[in-house]
Image 1 (cartoon, rainbow, N blue to C red):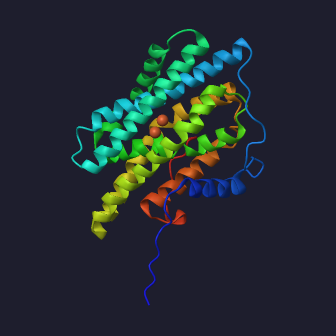
Image 2 (cartoon, rainbow, N blue to C red):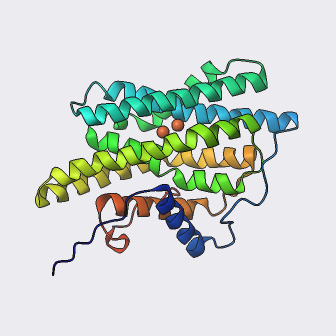
Length: 271
Ligand SMILES: [Fe+2]
Ligand SMILES: [Fe+2]
């Protein structure tokens, strides 16, 4: 009798299971569920920090839009085109909603500040996201999947939020982002399944190399962004580096179909 082992499908349930397992191992004191609802920012300083944090969020989404706009006409796979067009539209809508919430809270349109932050993403990423499929995969992994550890921690430990932004995030952003992560998994899976065993080895090596480059390029940004997140919305970041590194190992192990223990030592966010 032949037994075929297949990986479980990548779902939001699996993400939470993996994340909770990592918390048990690395930071058991962190909560598995939110214990208190966030409150709106109150003092001038809180409002200012919150607005800076939201502008950074809008820049993350607008950067995705700008990368996808360049990549979508370079690819010939119609299935990938359809996924990318959905992702582009969704992340554009997320950026636009954040822009308008900041405008409502601050009284001015932050579009120029958002673009300035997008320019910083282009600076530290260089041409990696648009260089070739390896660089683009690294971009998708970093901007959609590796950040899940931060998002989950945020959903459990943040202390400040704008109620309207929270409602939009729960109703629109969270389900959209789950679709984006699945789309990336599907694209890679289709590419991987078509390859011969020796090609697979090559694909894995190339994907890993690009992802490592992405991590090195992103380290400073991530560390700064986590500080801002702590200051603006009060999330617990003391254990985030170890959780982030461990989460990224889990994602790559799943993606590349390599057991965690067989993965080489990877670039750390602290490097
Ligand atoms: Fe988004
Ligand atoms: Fe997204």
